Length: 336
Image 1 (cartoon, rainbow, N blue to C red):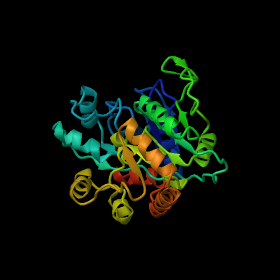
Image 2 (cartoon, one colour):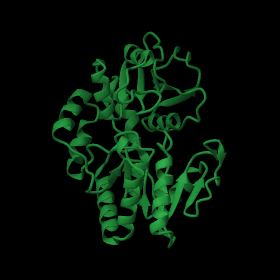
Image 3 (tube, rainbow, N blue to C red):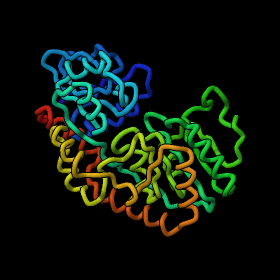
């Protein structure tokens, strides 16, 4: 049986690695997960990792996924680290989930072959809303909430206009920013620690608006989950959900696995954001507050955005079970 070894971060809970393990298992592989960065040799058919700069063992393909903006990527305007350069030198294939990252790589002179493989849509069912209170849910993704003070400031602005609107922030720790979760004592903000996945999905069910300010990739799962729940989604402009207009879904899915250069050429000129069609975006506290207040006062618009989001994600037939097989195909491995 084809053996895939996943090397994860040493001091991480490994959500990406566990998810990748499921993908390869679904593709018919035997999977081992290790946090030993030297554990790349032996009778392995493929090494898959989100760890940048990992060395490649002779004769074993190494696939490195750069996860999006964050510690393993290139922030706009910055220069690539030696580790990023080693990633391209050592890897058989480098997977990118965000065309914005490709722009930054090209700006920095890194032009080695890459593969664009945007995130698949999670296979989840989110319950219907069962709470009468108007709620804005701010989920935490892999990279946590970006500049959480913007959400807090937005909640303050909203609270002065409509104190009945409640913000729920999933901050990932019993203590956030070195203080207890209730340290702000805001009447309209509730801070939640890390929740089991099924409990987090319930928060989408309680919500009227989803504001995933942890968005840092072309299609973060927090955005997908908001779409699946049929809720208006307000994304962070840093993680602006590029190239997701519903009319282009079939083309987009057909590009998966093609060289990212081709994807970028099509995306840059022809395919624009779907903003305004099935999601909204902003990059400021004032902008978030204004959008929340507008949606609070316009039920028809909320329903329209939510319905469009559901239609879009229903047409997006790229699912987690397909990812393992796609990666194996890209490195010419036949499952045995």
